[in-house]
Image 1 (cartoon, rainbow, N blue to C red):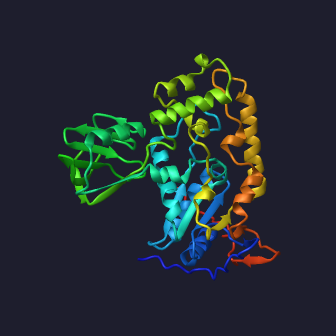
Image 2: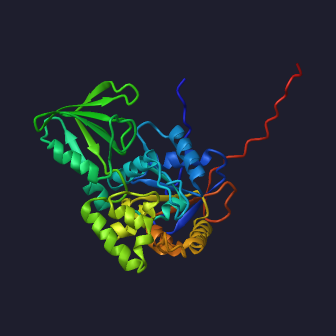
Image 3: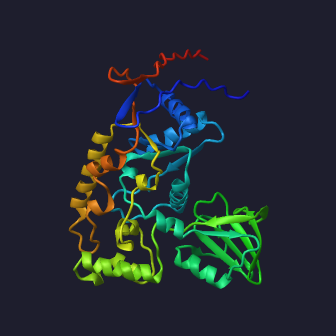
Length: 369
């Protein structure tokens, strides 16, 4: 039996300032967001307190949203600030897919956790400029393409099974692009793409024929010879120390991306951006948490982590302001967008109350035996 949705009569968010939506218990907030996004002239970004609540909000909105409403999730890297660990390739894939989609998003929902929102990101121009569209009939230099994949961070393997891998067998190139739900098999005839097929990574059997695919970079930073040279120069300027003892500098110089290299992102670019920079000007902001208090806590946690680790000369750390935006900068990024704050209690200020109610306690009777 199909789900029958009863949409709220959601008021429009004021063009200036902010408003509060009250009496949104349980999943009522997700239903309100889906109803707003369905008729909003631009995208809607939802900011939650933490990654766990972002995952839950994403699932709830997808439940209520109509099939044609795009619901994107920008996931957290699942690493503490300054950790010597890199995100799993599947997480990087989803992050890159969302970043590549945002600039052209005209209607839909983006869910992000507040700590993730405060992270600085690669420029959108690099994400889009580093992507490659392939289509049947297009000319493709196989050797140059393999070199580009290697420089872009893709790993050469004998059998492709996860994001960021590619394999070559004569005129056939298997690749699992970042941002894709499935790997692809590209068959070349001389220097022309003869066919593109999806294939199952478990049994390696080809399935559907495709006319075109898009290949995103494998990482959130470039790893070409030029990018490595720029990294080395900026590293020496930032850290005038004995670099022979610094593992991350030696690894990158040797063309190896060590774990945690993402926390040296500013050394690969002239400037960075933030997630709000990727969003269209007509984006609506929904805060499912106290942005001011939450941002202050995130900033304090990052600073405390930095103070704890900053004196390690074998792994010097960049200052928090180069990797994150502070609470004031976050407010500046969001102030130009219409904003609503979600609350479960009834708001007495200017705003809107949904009129939903908390469910009564459910008693379960268990019969003995």
